[in-house]
Length: 335
Image (cartoon, rainbow, N blue to C red; front, side, top):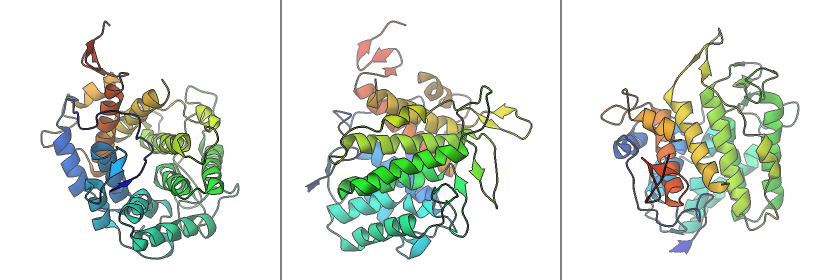
């Protein structure tokens, strides 16, 4: 057994404790494994399982998340370095943290080399936008909010594990470059929200909650890595201005509609940030009105988001910050 640190480790004491979030999180997590069919879903599921079952420091090669990731990683070349990305740069990279861990824990050069080649492709071969931001698409420069969850957390973690301060700094810069392009140019109540896709082929300036959730969660993972990385001299203070004002999905007429995926992921971000830097509402809502069905079914991405939200809320409770139906880490709290 080797000792390996993770971005959200050291934030909790007892990780096997569970609490009822108001819905069957075991069924949700089970379907999070079985429903995905695309590289980005495999990567998100791997991260969700890692945060749910094994966020602790000590790892062995039988970790549930890593066994799952190993069954989904298909080592290739270029944009498809860890899986078939279907034309995406960032999606295969969502399996990158798992590849790094599989390489370190099992001393497996195959995974270690694949992770390094994935880093090399993203940073030196993938198309770039006019401001230097790495493209989400492999054939033309285009920025997607989703990319921020897929690639930067992997790049940051790879940099931290391999003591590459330049790569770590460049990863933080990529988040700033993405914000420069995707942040909506408005002075309305939506100020600070990111547009979904900017580019020539899939242009979508919609203010999607799911896209903003991907971005916020990706930045939170990078921030946690920067704070933990031995090579980092100080936290990335610029993050404070990057996580702002997110909202429900909007249709073309500007009217919002509620949805589970973005709401759950944003709740996960809130819980993680509550622990990193000291919502019951969304957690309680998911347990009502059929948002999570009796068999635990949401949608493939939604499954993972709900698992991530539960793991973040559980850890927030364990450090005495979040409530469990009127109780704060075992102590009755007044309203």
